[in-house]
Amino acid sequence: MPVQALYALQNGFMGVERSVLFYGDFSGERVQIPVTCWLARTSDGLVLFDTGLAPRAVAGLVKNDPLARFTDDDLLVHRLDTLGIQPKDIDLVVISHLHYDHAGGAHLFPGSELCVQRDEHAYALNPAPFFAPLYYRKNFDLPGYRWKLLDGDTELMPGITALRTDGHTPGHQSLCVELPESGPVILAGDCVYWQEHLDHDRVPGVVWNPTLAFHAIRRLKTLARLVRGRVFPSHDPVFWQTVRQAPDAYR
Ligand SMILES: [Zn+2]
Image (tube, rainbow, N blue to C red):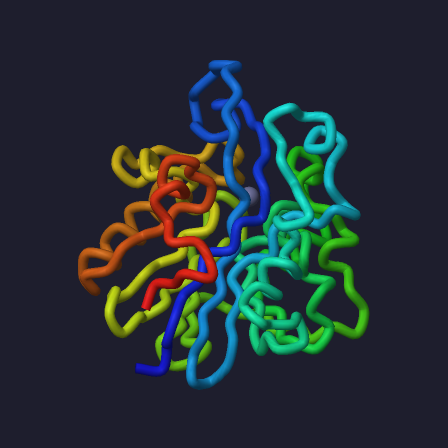
């Protein structure tokens, strides 16, 4: 099998209201959620999925939030360093979508291919006013960087497939990683915030199109069933406690 290992990279924590996580939930209760990145080691190269938050672009709300945690160890470069990997070693950086907590580290990879859906890239440069606060232009307006713009589902390398999962944003994508022992793992990105979204078809509270978001969750569940795989959510604090953290890996 071309894919050898999948590493979970902890990139800190944010505090958010439940209304941010669950469509139709108007509770002001705040919860702490992890910011997550993943690294796949394959015989064809290193693939990073999502780049987390950038300290230089962290919103004031994150800096002043008692539930936020962003230590030096949480920096993406330090997480990679514990695996003996430098940013220049990464061949492909797949970004689920360009919200600030997923695209924050893109600037670390001037030599890699940055892989995002064409529609997401276009929208991020010209977002509707209601969504503009989530897109930090300096995260992705990176002259000279090598963008690879995708149009829908795409096999990027043997065992590494981008899956289009619109709804949370206009060009969201998830990533299927086919592991030799663990089987296929679908890194959902913000298509699936928590396991509860998967179990009960819950749409994210931050959403561009709730109907498409609902369809995308159903689609990932169907794909996971057909390939006998698992779906890993993006911001689930309970799930995250069960995850093998780098340098441990899924193989
Ligand atoms: Zn998002």
